[in-house]
Length: 288
Image (cartoon, rainbow, N blue to C red):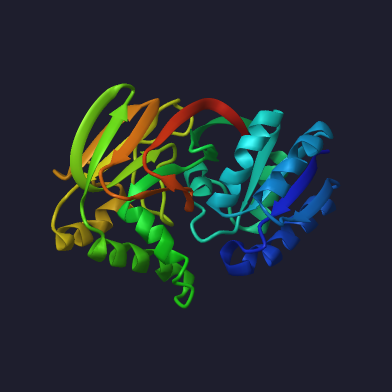
């Protein structure tokens, strides 16, 4: 029988992770598994516990959103362990990409009966990212969504996206993909391992977190109303054919900007540009 160490981000989903972990832990214990639950006091402390847990044969389980998954993924990969996911955040986009369930029974079923499978991860600005690194209007949206707690959770990302599109000025970017350098004026650059971000936007519909490649989606400058009107196509993943969208693939991507723009990864702040993102093929084992 497997053993599990559930690392919980108490702030995830507005505090919902604290309650969400209980029925999952109960189902695992009822099945005879050994379960340890730890409420995280910070990324570094959680990472410090991972090597010992892995050495004891425990599956590390991230209970939180995409940021929590990304914050643990690098340490789990380095320790040679396996990561499980209990998606309790606002977005849960990496779990969506992998087709993982959210209900306690489904989560427990995957953890108990699933198999570790290799996935790619991104290294950028000294951090591990599982979903995507982005810099532009979506960076502003990530900052705005943290201040949109007064809205119901399903409305927070759409509100932040529309407000960001209405206020973010076009920037002059330099993007280098595997040594090929290009310039464009636009509103964002997304370097994606996973196809989804922003709570269900299918921004990189052809991205595959097992193919060893980064999908780079660049959106060129256009009128604000045109960009806002195009948002439904991003949710559907039908935007790649639009004239303002540029899409390429590679293994290493450097994003620079003439203006002051911050890069985010998995919903969390990473660093101001320039930032280099590198794929690490099949570096992480995930329960699926």
